[in-house]
Amino acid sequence: MIDNLAILQQWLEAQTAIVALTGTRIYGPPHPEHGYEPEDDGSALVYHDMPGNVMAHAPIETLRIQFDCYAKSTQDARALYGAVYDSLHAKPTQVVGAGEVKASHQVGTPRTLRDDETGWARAIVDYEITFST
Image 1 (tube, rainbow, N blue to C red):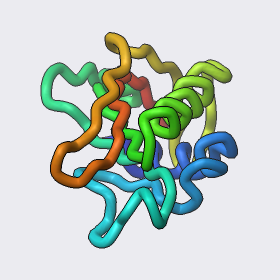
Image 2: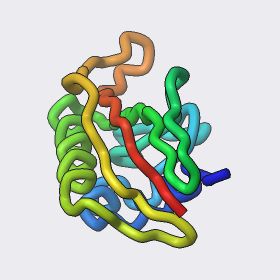
Image 3: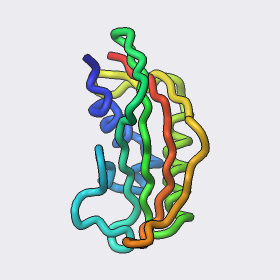
Image 4: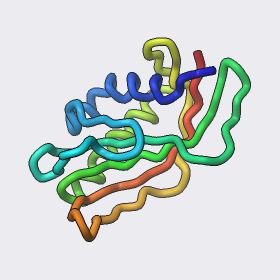
């Protein structure tokens, strides 16, 4: 079995355009860590795998990942989405740790919204990402 989310975490932490906007605020599911505030802390990236079809043909697996780009403004959330987009489309295979991000495909268009309760801006986008070991 491929630990896709561990590979993805390592890959995201190696992307300078993403890290320039988030620092160390790259989180696995489901939300930013407790106490996170975009106004004080800056942008954050949260990812999680989505239910549905997973294509698994060892040693290659493709699954759907949702990225939530949190920020203090919709412009900043869209800028973080842009960094994710650019990084995922930069080159076909990127080796990290024990695995590879082989390919990616954006599913649909990004959605931008603002949470009424917290006031946080968020851009949401889904990708199908192919991993291998």
